[in-house]
Length: 115
Image (cartoon, rainbow, N blue to C red; front, side):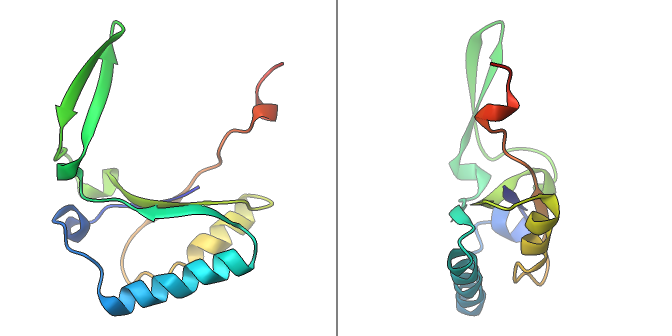
């Protein structure tokens, strides 16, 4: 999974430019043509979200926006099928960002857990 970290702009609800969206569309097409794209979406700013936390089994809902630096929040993601971490990092290096941060994380598979 390639996780897009939020920025001050994304948390302020500023949408990407048409040019940036066109570049992202080309990148998504490249992922699709390579057969690695499973899913990918951008997320609205945290003011439109909620968090559900649990203490002692009881859920507590907190409405956004969420405190903390924007880089600790998620602004979007891609789920890709890469043969290994290095390939996933190479795809992340190709994201057409001028500024930003992508975190690459491996998703657990059923075979990772004991029977």
